Image (cartoon, rainbow, N blue to C red; front, side):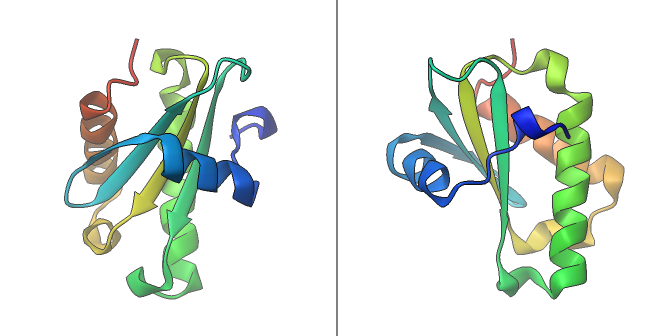
Length: 112
């Protein structure tokens, strides 16, 4: 995922949590915050130590980043997205996780 699509600053995460709306399923929670000053969408991923060690957390981050990179043309602009990985996502393979990300994005109305 390219740098302009990343959400890294702690203040940005806090703003999305505080003012954004959320959608969830058993594997993921997605917070969405509309920001007119951002030209494209930005994605941040939060994976707690509760879901596993660093290998597991980083794998979840890499998979979700790749899924979002491939879906970039379908995502609306001017929005910050924060995914929170739940414990159920760790046992999923790529295709199941892709369907779960698609489901939660559809529930949050972030597709064009």
